[in-house]
Length: 235
Image (cartoon, rainbow, N blue to C red; front, side, top):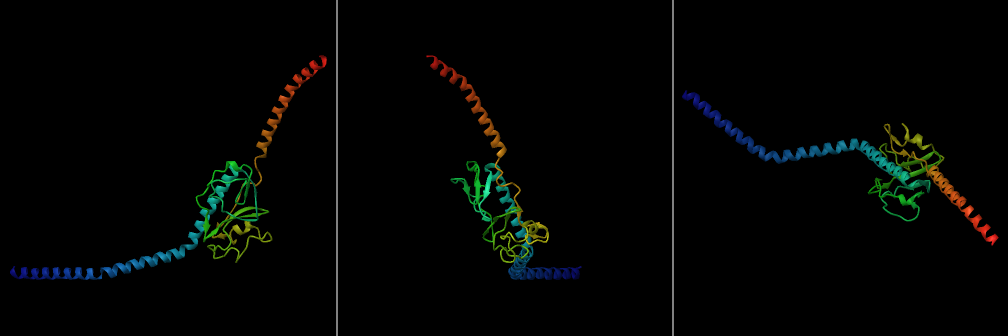
């Protein structure tokens, strides 16, 4: 028994000594281990970011385009867009709160007093470039601005250009395989409302009503005028 106790005592002491040595070594090497693990995580982060960069840019463009199109739809509904000034226009007016006249940015409005801006707190940009409204015969489009590098590695205005009306239609560029499409996701949008359609039916109805009211008042006044003239003639 005494022999066994001695053996257990020796093993116990050795285990305690081994544990203490391990703890000391772990404390000494822990900073190196932490730095190595942190460096590995940073490398993985940048590697993942680099590989997912096209997807990230695509999601940013999609979100920005949606916000711009939604804002323009609200403006047309509330103010009625009569015209868009130029063939190429910067979207630099959505953060405007008040303005004078009927024009704001590139838009000419039928009812500017109905402006309810700002529609966005900041005008969206990509790579420091404003988005643009491109006016073409086949429609009006919201697209990334000149100089922007798209997720398909094409640069707007350098590798392709949508500013010339002689080029392929923008609808084709937005379709699968087009310059403005990344893996099935369009990198722009066509405006669906009709520019210049400023509620003519409502205006026509209001005008007709006003004319009818004026004629009724005129007809009512005719007998009185006739009677007054007749009375004066008799006198």
